[in-house]
Length: 240
Image (tube, rainbow, N blue to C red):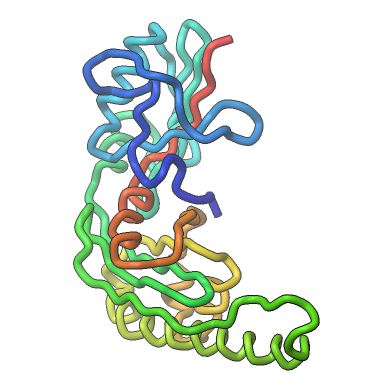
């Protein structure tokens, strides 16, 4: 999955900002293989593309495999990825339209002792359930019998995952037909344990590769995660 919410769940105000036409300090999370990742809200994509051209000169573009690639005369490049649930297209106008189309997304965020499940309609959270369960933290060696402690902790984690799975069954399964995609985040092992429930096969089939890097799930975290779930992720390669 790809891979977290770069730049703290917000649109990145980098030198690629589309606001005001003024370059800002470079920002974004370093990308494997070079460049940096920035997040742009769907409603800002057309302005971002225009701003890229304004700063870097005339650009050429291709659209292939759900990725819009821009290359400017100063050799700056940008690879724009369609957000979860968007329909793959083959031209720039179609890409912008598809990226900007409101979508209904399921959200499943979980760590060992807490989870948040929700449905986002565009930028709005329209249904949600957040809960937490006690899971013992690790103890120093020499205290409890390690095997006994490990069994107890594992049972607590299983109970927490089971409770989260029940919530996903109640909240998302009845809405599967209306969801464009499901976006997950938090701790991968915990999320995988939740979605391993056979009743959640229809939900698991909609899970997008994007995986959000979020703190312990709370209602505020769930609301903030919508921005990362909707964002167009862009890999920017600055000119040499």
